[in-house]
Length: 174
Image (tube, rainbow, N blue to C red; front, side, top):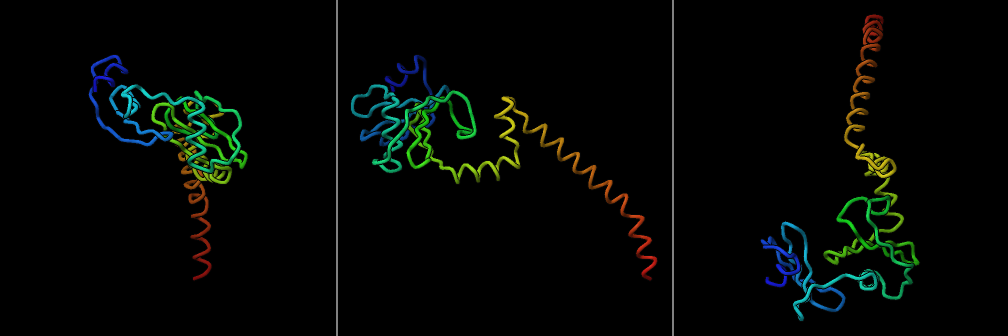
């Protein structure tokens, strides 16, 4: 605990502790109010996720034989990394798979082109997050409300216009 407090440079209230295997080592993940801290279980020192360790973690999750492109450090959400903690390391592999590794926790999220297309079509059409990524502003909620309101107006006006015709058709039929 003293090492976590020293790493955080403050009085720390630990909310959760996890024991994780990270790159062939055992680490403690301390979740606090101010953030997450990885501590090497053997040395007791803070464990830093470097780009090379991120590449190894991602390769271990997939196939260690895959070739990886240079690692990018991502500081904002985009089409490949829609939500989650920032910054992250992005590791692109030769089979079109992309892994995102959190430097704070060592967590690895893997996606490929088919999953990304499904996310774009299913999630993007219902939440407008692709527009938020392009514009750079959280436009999803107000745009969703505006589209819903416009749809209700169109549906209501359609019923209003069709109602007299339905009544006339019903009279002719009887």
